[in-house]
Image (cartoon, rainbow, N blue to C red):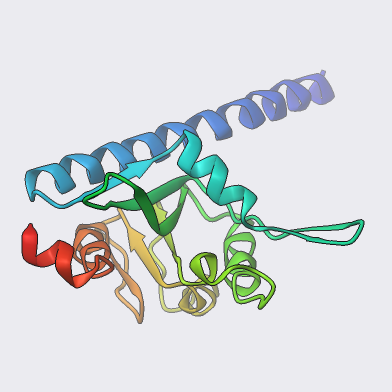
Length: 187
């Protein structure tokens, strides 16, 4: 009986985790898009679509018969909408409801992105993490680990600011700083 309950509980947890993660990503993207629009910023965030698929493909290196997959966890792509309406990727956001056992996955992708075999346009894209539950207390080992990322934004009011760990509210200004100069002067 206990084994059956555990199996059912594990199944439910494994089903709910991706659902919660996808919902969280969609909320973050929607909030960013509303913020971009309200500030008249030529930016847009995407959780699906051809931009995300195309960007993902650029993280795959082909050397002869070998295929090296360096794709990051692309939950959200933030792009600059250029005057000619072309979307130029500026940032990848990994959205996690919790970092339990997953933070190293995101950090490793930051390391992969420096691979010289990747196109420069891909290596220059910033990689951010947004998390809902973490507090990054002084004793939290992840507090040091996430310093390798370009930015970490926390939706928990009890978190401890440290290095690049900031409140979610500061993300918009950091994303705005990625825009080309001509985009800022015209917005």
